[in-house]
Image 1 (cartoon, rainbow, N blue to C red):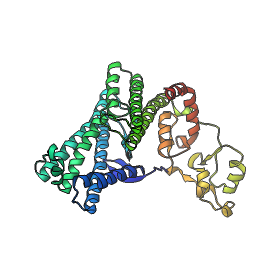
Image 2 (cartoon, helix red, strand yellow):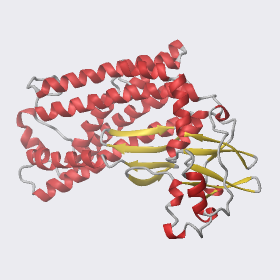
Image 3 (cartoon, rainbow, N blue to C red):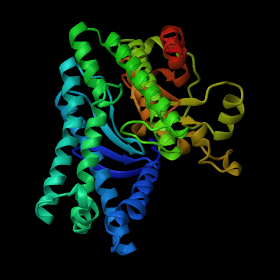
Image 4 (cartoon, rainbow, N blue to C red):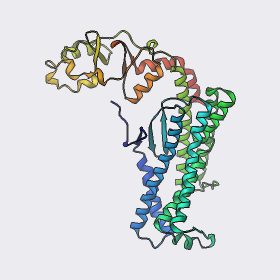
Amino acid sequence: MHRTAGLSLGSISGIEIHADWSLLIIFGLISFGLATGLFPGWHPNWSPATDWSTALAAAVLFLISVLVHELSHALVGRAHGVQIRRITLFMFGGVAQMENEPPSWRAELDMAIVGPLTSLVLGFAFLELASLVNGPVRIDPNHLQRSLSALGPIASLLLWLGPINVMLGVFNLVPGFPLDGGRVLRAVMWGITGDLHQATQRASRLGQFFAWLLMSGGLAMMLGLQIPLFGAGFVNGLWLAFIGWYLNNAALLSYQQLLIRESLEHIPVRRLMQTQFLRIDPQMHVATLVNEHLMGSGQRAFPVEANGKLAGIVSLRDLQKCPRDALERTSVAEIMTPAAQLVTLAPDQDAMKALELIGRHDLNQIAVTQNGAVVGLIRREDILTWLSMHAGGGLSQTKRT
């Protein structure tokens, strides 16, 4: 069974939308900051209820803006043949989870650039809506308080949403992989060199450089120095350093994922799968399974076969379905996961597909079948062993970078 941390928000055009629990942090920070700082500063005469209701609405619309940004990536990616099943929103924004790399540099370029462009369009659209709702918004720098206090709640939240979306679009254009600007840079280098591996490595290193700039700037702000565009202050500096730390890890991980994909793609499952394993009869009692097979072997999942065909799999997780006092009278067939509910692979499918399925469905192993019969088991540790032998050097080098 597939398990995902967070909350499912439904789906759009067949793409699952999930919210990570960390999204509550950024939602709370935005709401609290607007309700207790920005909006009371703009509108001293507003009631706390107006401040909070406007702030909550602004926070919700901002997160919807982030979702639209990610949807633009996903829909353009789909048009280029990239499989995207899920978008996850979390405290640093959102991510469209790709099942495969873009097939060409042009597909990568189109998919990367559309996100920042969408945010810029949203930003200017919100500013235009503010003018339509409130009439032409004229901010007099010499009488800033008077200009802002004349705005109503809707115009105020739109006037905040406009610049914040523009800033989001501009920030994502910074050429630091895996930000959108870094992906644009990777696409350009990929197009020039024709080498995705080299382009990803260079873009990842530039992303790490940008991340270290953010972390250094954040540390300087925490020590009281004034940083252009970011200001000063311990809290702001800590937040900037935290963003830099996250981007550094993301840049490393993105390159490592490419190394893993290169090591597993076009490698058939039959080269990694286990062919020596115990098979169980569906009529076997659970007590026999536990006492004679499970305790005496390192095997954690057992294919259940009937008439030479896969009937299901029984694993340690399935044993929890059977009370201890019923082990002697319960058959394996009663607790196993039936074949119809199993994820299976064919021997000639590539190992990258196996890794994706293991991760997506939170599995430890997958049965490999041919014509309905089990011919092998591919386990998570089999894939890790292969990677340690064939991608270990590249992954270690990435960690030292």
